[in-house]
Length: 422
Ligand code: SF4
Image (cartoon, rainbow, N blue to C red):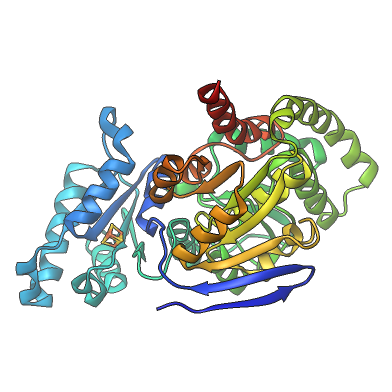
């Protein structure tokens, strides 16, 4: 079953589709979240398929004491919910006894129907009481039903928000929201300090006991575009949003910092003084990958929800021509600053009907296709150069220092194909 409609979104046309989709589920988020929150453990309540997905997506964990696992729900568990609750309690209790270093335990739901029937929120509350709130226990769903893989992070962070302490005092504090690589956080902290923003927190923090407080004095800004539920949860706690494009690329990062600085009433001349050198450096570093990308045509399939900010970066800073920009969901409020910077007339697509979209892609004959793993291999076999969008979520791509690396991620498949053609 599929439905398709075309509607205008400001200066852009939007194809809206509700058909078969090719995306990973929200469990995938565990792969980067467990690296970010260094004393958290993610216990997936799921099937053998879930266990396989996690093991193959996070195979790199082989040298480390893993901080995620799957409590596999077998067919026999269908016998009764009481048994299932007991089994979950038993697994969690054994885990906490063996790993006293865990400070935050997430019970992560999945899509098998027996798991959906389990009340993981209640199980988390029950276990937290049993453990005397050490560790904290929270629940969220990473189910693949009707969701895409970056929504796992959104679900995880929105589960954290109600547990954050109230922000003290009347002073305004900045909250940067979205899992970032440590190196990116450090760079951002240095620039915030140079701008004169005294109190800056990041959600999620690197450790469970360092999660930031939140309250009416909090101004929050998203560092990732796929955090709609988290944004709503923060606003429920009184935090006020700062609208800004995503900090991708030299221009995107400059506009992100400028929007934050404006919200804090910082003199634009001072902001210019702080940002001019990193902007110049990032712009100069972009020259080499831009030479390979400029004038080339790119087609983005809906996958990571990073597609609109990436398309903005590829068009404006790398000179690429957008043939179609797909996104699993179009959150017009959160995306407004990036949408406003897309070239007029850019073709957007919300949702997916994969066969129709593949037909449009073949007809457009782009030089580069950005898509999920499931589509990349068949498209490569048809002669298209592809970029796996999931790599963009695993790599540090935000900020000035990473702008050229981000462009190089797109230039590399074109360089490889050029070599093969030679
Ligand atoms: Fe598959 Fe659902 Fe488990 Fe994801 S949560 S691995 S989609 S069964």
